[in-house]
Image 1 (spheres, helix red, strand yellow):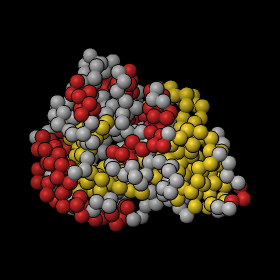
Image 2 (image 1 turned 180 degrees about the vertical axis):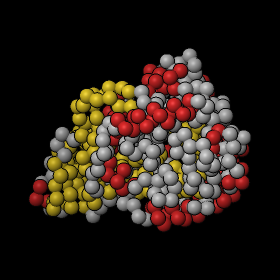
Image 3 (image 1 turned 90 degrees about the vertical axis):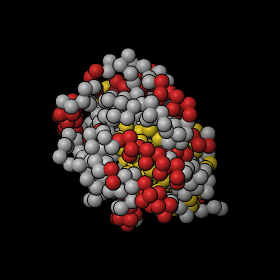
Image 4 (image 1 turned 120 degrees about the vertical axis):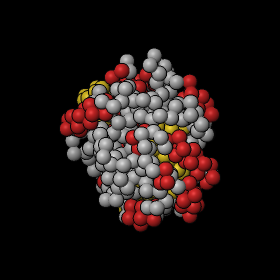
Length: 419
């Protein structure tokens, strides 16, 4: 009789990668998934988790967050905000550049139970002095063109392919000498990604670079994040329709990611996009020190907002499991519950609620269903579930409103203009 370390019993097992959706017992032995069955005998396991009434899914993957804690202003505690919320793999997107990556490996990756991977910033400094909110005094990581180190980026990626899954660039005028360095930094980032044959993720908000160039010059497999932001360079035109460059990019195979963030998710843009059938390929948080207690909170909360928009539950799970795994070329290791895979497993409840949830500009929508993490296993070992300090958080909503009031002074396209 087979012996298992864990039986996760009676849940609705949902594994889009393998077309599984049904009530099953999931068994774990020696850190790997050992069996999926309709009825595993309790005596064959040391420990049993009663998952009846819950969803049992592959360990969630957050394709966009910032986990270089204590080193960059944006860094958060990955195990508290990721593993504690059901995320077993997190992708830090650009906190480290080639000059700071070894520290990221040593002090962030090695100290986290969460599997922490990275996109390398084209800026050699990464986000060591990243701006927060309406900060105008702190320099941007591309204010000096010398920081966009093409050769250093390529060399660092090639030396660290076990952790680095691609390249990252932030295209915002305020980060790049009021836009003067944006086009050249973008060119170098594209060149670096092509040289190492990995995807480029582009943050493209409040940018002087046109949609015709970004995502227009991106290639199949590249990732356009912050898809639903409502500021200058938004994907929605003034008449409420999707910009043709965006649809053409998707047809070429460019991937579109949520990247919720502190300013990069606008309910109106998301609603207009979804009505036109333009859904994100991947759902992510852009979780960092300015978003982890609102407005993003965690990945299940961002999933809840996509569920509210009308994305079917199976697709919400798909776009937080196998699709982000494919986006970084890790689909052979993570994102599914195949027998023999490392046992990264998340149990979620789908709860009835009646509350308002905010976007990044304090617009509110009333949601009726919430995805909530109930249990998590990373490589077969259980993690400790954590909760937001307050959900939803009125203080975070007020803080967002104040921050974007400041931004609107210098942005000619404030979020309220999209109707």
